Image (tube, rainbow, N blue to C red; front, side, top):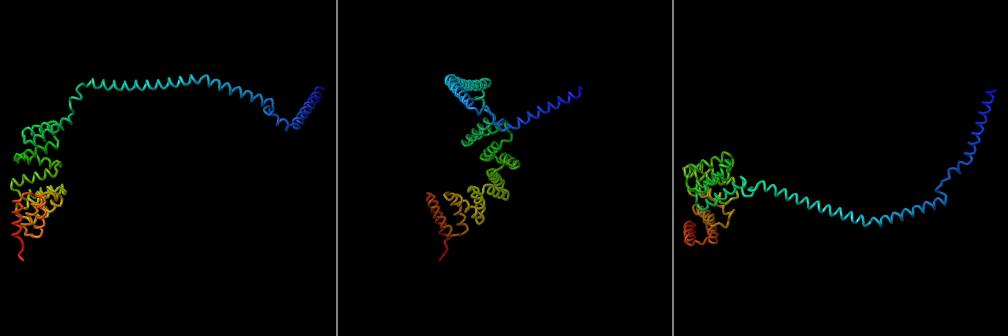
Length: 300
């Protein structure tokens, strides 16, 4: 009996479920289209709510606008005050650093002291105050025992005083340490000439020219070295190069003219003489050159 009732209940439940499924399937399209937002009343209600919200937002903006302006001004003022305070702190920090070293500006650094001593030494040397100049250079070497400018300066004042051993020792040091320049090589040539070592002097002259090939004075020194030893044929190329590099120098033109006269080159000597007339005002010297040029003039 119980089993029969169970089956009857099961059959009734199945029938009810079937009826429900049938009704849902029949009205499925209508159920899908059912949307609360599609109802006109609902749409109008949402519009009213949106208008109210927008108006409320506008009212809030109007009310808070002065507060925002005040806030922005406060932010700007705060930034300005912070910047000014920061600058004050920077200035105070610098003042404090200077206060810790009250003589920092007064006491020069070692480099500044060396520069000052070198300037003083050069000025004293120009005034021919050799002893005082030497003292300044020695002070520099006590601070920097490898200072090239000090060694060059000392070599110069020794050479000018004809203290050849001291000058030679100084310039040889610069050569060995590879700190020498054309001035040092020319000075070594002067020293070797004084010692009578012409071969070494010539080598130093050539080295000075090689170091500064575009310096007219170095070529002129080499030309004069040869001319003084009656080697005007060798002197002429260097003398010509000196006049090419410095065509307005009367001294170099005279040296070139001297070489040409000794070599018997009348046409070139005549041309150089005409150039020299435009550069020199020494009429007596010009007259002597003209007389010598006339002597080498070829007989027609």
